[in-house]
Each structure stands twice: as structure tokens, then as C-alpha cells.
Length: 227
Ligand code: CO
Image (cartoon, rainbow, N blue to C red; front, top):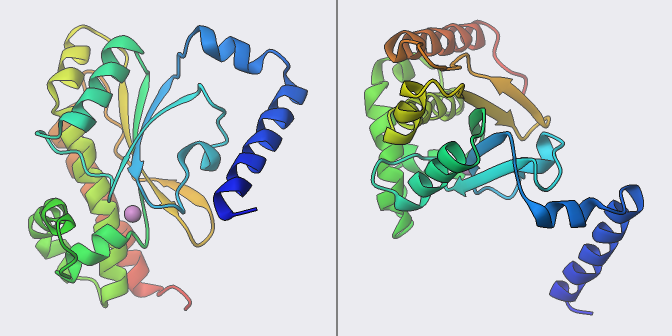
């Protein structure tokens, strides 16, 4: 058996286990999908969207790319947001970053990796925007953690500024955009205090999230993490 044969064996076992719990499960999914959430996360193999929030197929609409970046000219990401907001009518959009993000680290160190350097320019824009806050951090590891958080906050704003989300709010659609971060060291999610809903001031939400990030960063300075 080669490595990919193993995946088919795993798949059969997985499908069997699900059907044992709910014999109608796959039949129900063929009829429609109506996931309540859109997840925009990093492509990193250690951050499997459904698994870390305990959701089954059909419950989470997912878009992943390197470093969970939302770019206003990325037709792929924008199409996912449009379909999720206009057609599926999700109630929550979650932008989820993670500590130790390879994309964020590469951007910080200006490492030359090839084509992807162009994509990571977006993270360098985030870095430049928050230069002052990042400069306060004691070392590169702490700066990297903070940049992972700030990247999520900035991408939440990008989601909120899309014509799809603006349009949904104008129509009175109850849609909330969240910014979360996942810690691959303990498997836990943290809310980055930037939930933006209809009628909220984007500027106020942004400032509140940046203040919260600054408070966390200052606390981390006075009580450095073990290891
Ligand atoms: Co990542």
C-alpha cells in the first residue's frame, strides 16, 4: 500500500463511522448546504478549519490561502465571500489566523521564497501600518505573535470593506465579521476583540481591536512566555 492508498482506506473508514452515527447523513448533504459560517483561514496544514471548531461537513464554508489574506483584487476570495454572503446567507464570517504562521514569518524576515513573496507583500503592508506598535515588542518571537494578530485585524477590516459585506449591511442582513487567532501550541482559539456587525463603526471596532492587541502585547512584555 502506498501513501495515497492509505488516504482512500482512511476515507472509507471515516464515511463508515459517520454513517454508523447517522445513516442519512450523506443523503441529507446531497440535497443542500446551508452552513451558518464562512471561515477565512490560513492554508497551513496544522489549522484544519472544521476540525478545530468541531464542525461536520455542511456546517462551515471555507476559504484558505497563505496567511489568511483578504485582498480587494483577489477574485477567488471575493467570490467565496459573495457566494457565502449573498447566496448562503451566512450569519458569521470568521477570519482566523494562527501563531507561528510561516507566511507572516517569511514576510517579517523578507525571506526570498519565489512567487509567494508577491503575495506576502500584503503582510508587509500590515507591518508598515503598525510599525510603532510592533517596535515596542522585546524580541522577534513576540513581534511575530503580534503581527499574526494584527494581520487578522487588518484582514477583518478588508472583509468589512468589500462591496458584498457593505451591501449586506445596507440591506439589513444580520452579518457579523469576527477576528480570531489559533494557537498551534495548545489547540486553542482566541477572540481578537473585533466583532463587526451591522451599524457598527468600522473605525471604532478597528481602534478597539488595536487597543486590545496593545494591552495583550504589554502584558506579554511584563510576563514573558515560558520557552
Ligand atoms: Co499560516
